[in-house]
Image: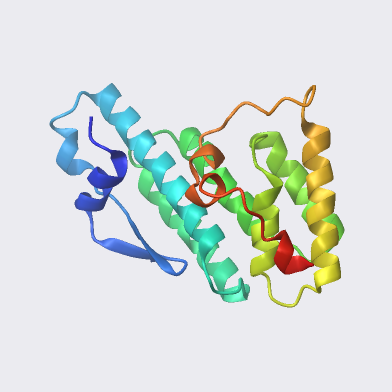
Length: 194
C-alpha cells in the first residue's frame, strides 16, 4: 500500500501551515477507484498523518509562538475540519483534530495553573502525550521567565508521572508515537531552561 504522505503530497498543492508546507489532499480522484468503506479508511489515515506532521512541525519550528501563530493555528484547524468532514464523519474528524485545538490552548496558556489544567485535559484524551510536548511549547513561548518555565515543565512532568497506572506507559495513541521530534532523540531541551 502507498505511504500516506507520498499519496497526500501528490494530490494537491501545498498549503502554508505554521512555518512549513503541509499538503492538503483532494480525494475525488481516488473516489471512483476505491470501494467506499476503504476510501473512508484511507481518508481517515490521511487525516491522522496530516495531524502528526502538523504537530511535528509545530514542535520543531524555530519561531516563537506569538498571537499571530495562535490565530493561524485556529484557522488551520478550521480548514482541516471543513475539508475532511466532506469525506468522513464529523465525530471522527473532531476526534482527530481535537489534539490540535488542545495544543493551541496549551501554547497560548499564560499561567502555571492554566498550563497544568490544559495538560491534564490533554492527558484525558491523549494519555500518551509526554511532558516533552509541554517542554517544547514552553521553549517556543516568548516572554516566559526561565524560572516559571522550569516550574511549568516540572509540574507537567509530575502530572504525567501521576497519570501512569502502575508506572506502565499509557496505551499509544495515533499522534505522539509517530511525531518524529519526540521519537528521534530522547535529548531534552531542559538544559536550555537551566
